[in-house]
Length: 322
Ligand code: NAP
Image (cartoon, rainbow, N blue to C red; front, top):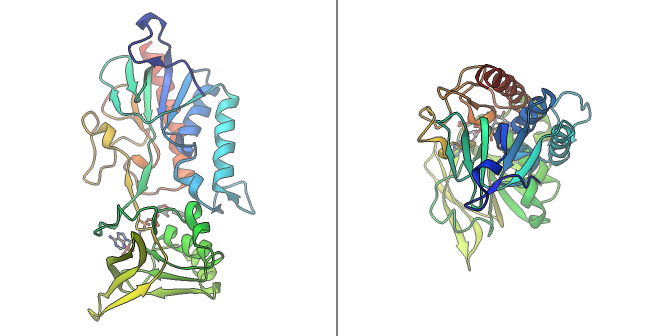
């Protein structure tokens, strides 16, 4: 963990270390940017609010990352990516970035307690699970509502749960939870899954996963402050029903973690940072990479690719400006 950040109002400016690259976010994109930056001989700091790995670290099994023919655990891959960056000298600091000042030649990054300086910044803040927006969803988070099957699935061993969504995450969650839970009901608002074909056979092979098609959740049913079920509506027949479950796993896509940059970088209508394919934003020395950048495909491999590209763009920028 880096100790070189300036404790707010305690270290004189002349003692503040200025990194070549500050990467905000330690997911696969951030770790790769750090590896490439460090390997190019640049000083790199990665600031990460939680554990490195981002969403990947909460994935039970990654089976489409090249080089792992038998698949690999998301957490394990995250640790390996961090170790790879550290091998080339990248430093990691934990802290949630609260404020950025990106306009000047020296960029300033603030967490609650520290200030970091960099010649360039790579925004690699990724995305977070989208909420359903149902009443009491937030207050029941951790009391039956979860956004991470691999993190929380074990709390529902032998119980009945629902997974809401029809994409890769929902399908993967349903397959994962079927191994732990008594019964899994996958609730999808349409009559076909968005999930890739690779998930269809594993889903079919689970004897305890039932799919409710054309169905949306309208209300979370609660008793004594914990989830007891869902009120559902079939969008074709308009019929309402109740489903009794102990846990609800929400897997309805992601929203970009871009609020931090709202005042200084251009965002598209969905909140993704606008940057070109080399990851350059409209602000000099600031690059946006990985799932937070506007692009068409968001996978671990594309996050990794963006990270390498961003490090190269930052290296070129530093060579031209400093
Ligand atoms: P996603 O692909 O955006 O799918 C979100 C799903 O949630 C869709 O089925 C969508 O329905 C549904 N949905 C969205 N809003 C909803 C709402 N308000 N109420 C009910 N349902 C709603 O998200 P994801 O599955 O999290 O995947 C995100 C990205 O990560 C994708 O690029 C995916 O390929 C990738 N990923 C890859 C893997 C892997 O390759 N192993 C694993 C996980 C995720 P509609 O289908 O009707 O739009």
